[in-house]
Length: 90
Image (tube, rainbow, N blue to C red; front, side, top):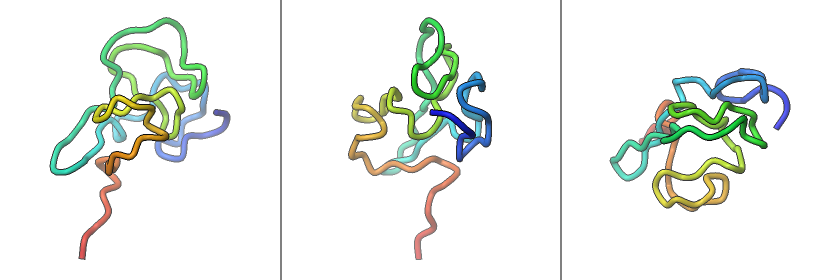
């Protein structure tokens, strides 16, 4: 991924992590953390974040794993929303 992240407005792949505003997703009344659970080596080959515990992939990264179903986030079928982008209900 090259350019700016549409959620945190940081340059990819130079940013160390997506912003803290995008750390959680919401699904079925539960809040799930998108933060990495352990340290890795180097940077993500897609979005460029540092693979460090607590960092968050940029939204749409093909290497981010869904914290709910454990499938790649970009192709999972969980009904989840970024916590700060929950749509309003009528």
